[in-house]
Amino acid sequence: MAESKRMAESKRLSGGCLCGAVRYTAVPDKPEMDVCHCGMCRRWSGGVFMSVPCNELDVENETVLGRYASSDWAERLFCKECGSSLFWRMPSDKSGHVAVAFQSFDDTSSFTFVAEIFIDEKPPLYDFAGERPRLTGKEVMERFEAQQESGHE
Ligand SMILES: [Zn+2]
Ligand SMILES: [Zn+2]
Image 1: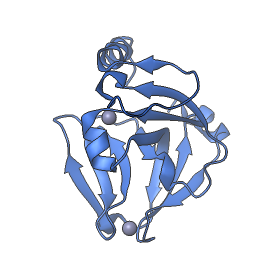
Image 2: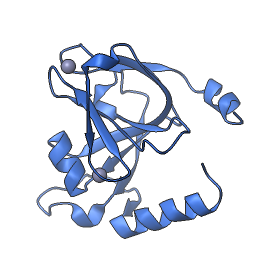
Image 3: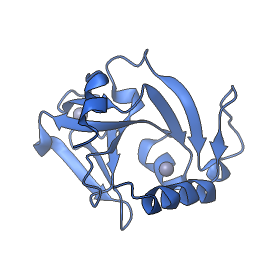
């Protein structure tokens, strides 16, 4: 893969669920975290889904992973023992890309908070401080489609 050299430059990080039944390592694309305010992520995570775009996910004990197809194109993976929300991915995407729950990493100190998405679905009673891009669901989908059309696979 053409991307493997770039991936090798990122550091592999470890994490796991609340009870420890699921342990994993993954390589962040960049040391960056973003937040999704969409209704599905809020219900699934019990808060907002803070995630880190990663590749090369390696799960130690896959049998403990529960899987929920939250749409026709995405699935959410969680610990069957303790219920921790862990991974979001598109099964049709063979690039190995997975959004890993920021809060599940053992060490979150290296990440910066770079974006908020589906800001139009955020309940009005909370806001995150600081300045960063805040995209609506429509803007996220437009960017995603542009990426697909540019040959990103
Ligand atoms: Zn667990
Ligand atoms: Zn979401």
